[in-house]
Length: 168
Image (cartoon, rainbow, N blue to C red; front, side, top):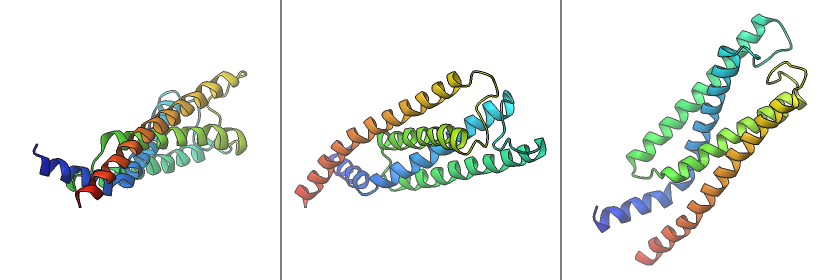
């Protein structure tokens, strides 16, 4: 790549930095929801999205949950395709969004849906504490990784904006 192409890519990365994050967040939400739905709802049969009613209502709620994860994933991929078309795709920044989206979804699920709303639990066993602890620790690790990646790209972004202003 020559310096003109590098400058074009740097300009696009700076211009679309937030779009990279949002595409990653939507993908992370969709991926975390998909894994939850596939593993815990369908394969292990540990719970449904809504367990406070009949089995049929639980299955319908799983269907809506699956649709949400699918729409989130598809929306993220449309944003990603647009970023690629504009030479604005920034993998590290996108990964930061993905970790923040996936971890945020999982933490929301673990605290709000499991504990506050009580619409379902991870698994219906006597000692739920271990399951909750592992679930929320994984979510916190994902969020922490997302923050670390975001901070490193913010430093790079300041450098990109500095070279753009210096070049004009």
